[in-house]
Image (cartoon, rainbow, N blue to C red; front, side):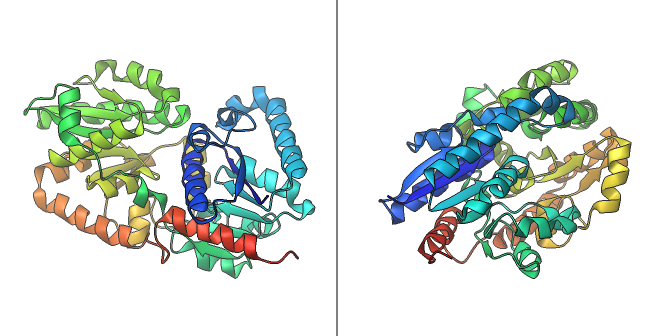
Length: 387
């Protein structure tokens, strides 16, 4: 039996793990799997050692009460890997947990592949040397990452970004409008304040104020919020005084239908910086990227950040395709102006969409879909002779 052990610490990693399992099985039906993951990997017939949601904590106040439980989960995971002795261990994103696990099991001699490179290239380049001692190969999502990690002596494979097979561009606009009773006068817009409580609580008030300004200039705006269950109640509370009742959607299919409805009606997006910018690009939705942290954190980040843009679309295009309104510039007035610009001026919308195509073209790996390229890289690790 050849066992592949896959570890993911949050929902996005669970999706990547499920796709990787399917792609590996398509090439090697004889493989067996063990996992720490969630429902998507369970759908592939691979149950989790424990509920991965126990790892989905952010911020000191959330972590401290559960620190001993988290340590126990880490110990249990390391013991399970050591007992099962897989042919390869694949850790996915969530470096706070997965790379600690990798460090604990590395002395056993199991090959370790880390899927989704930590963004040390953006603001912690000194940490790359520590990473070299924990993993044997990194599977990168972004085309400029291999040069950085290879320079530190870490083998790297660029596998492409999973947004390319996310289905973000495959939604059904008519189905969404019918499901939510939208009329021809309604102009849906996407609002994404983040999937973590701290992010959402900091951005929702300024987003609400921006929407009030925008609605006064362009009637009929209807905010649509794809939300994670963990922040749904906070969103509902913050949106009580918004100019139009927001539509909250849960689940991948509903989110992609919402994207299609916004794109078809000439809408736009008001989103937190992060992977959601790539989702907007896939769906063809012009948008503005926003972010705000406390002033002390902002001062520290400014000294550490080594990249010129917050949006991945802008980083890939090497220019500002979408407007970024960060920290002091993240004001209701600035956000409203940037949100409305592509809705009021077709040339602005067309320019953004042209930039999307340019950026997304950089995300395609040489070997098929991202999950297929990742599977090939893992199989090559399996085929390597033992050291």
